Length: 280
Ligand SMILES: C[S@@+](CC[C@H](N)C(=O)[O-])C[C@H]1O[C@@H](n2cnc3c(N)ncnc32)[C@H](O)[C@@H]1O
Image (tube, rainbow, N blue to C red; front, side, top):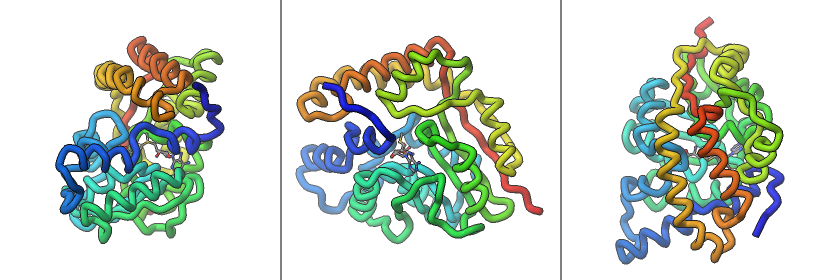
């Protein structure tokens, strides 16, 4: 079955990882959902490559510590936000476009007792509902690939940061231009918008006013992780088809297979960017 994708929301409203699926898995493995600890969610709620270690790498880049006010752009189900609150004592506000993910993040956060330090609010990172100079750090993981105007999102990150505040994010990058057929496949299957190369992306961050501190090419790491994830999606595909989620849709699957090939070929990959808002 194919579902037409018109936006990232169409994709994430039907994503195979959801609050309901996470809670169902936990209920079946522990018998009940009472007294859930944050750590019990971490195997399930991190929708990016590299799990908790990827959060820790961003935390180091963004100098996140006890009491840091962090905005997580495209927060998903709030997994990274909960980790930063639980491990570092940060106070995290996630911005998330997909209503089901905003609701799911609230439910998961409440269940693990982190609601005083983590909230995920509905919003678009191109129009962030946060005050100027209200945050010490902005992070984002594997999500700006969905955002049509990345310059606008970076300008919003700059606006909400205090002078001296840090930006740290990972995202897909294009090491070579993609064919029109690949662009169409990635859009239709995974809601992927225009991508930048590492250098062009760094220039975009600078154009938003930031001083770029580091740019890391994560392509080799991702190539390995993606092979494992593709094997997982292959297994999940049958289950997903039965429940009508996108992992079962041909466009998602074809798109994912092609994405993994493009990363293995070095045409696509990942980057981690760290930058600082200058103190003027
Ligand atoms: C791959 S998930 C990453 C979630 C989270 N960062 C994590 O690592 O677990 C991408 C998320 O970006 C959200 N998203 C896409 N476009 C957005 C936008 N313009 N503003 C806010 N969120 C957006 C999607 O709804 C989805 O939840």
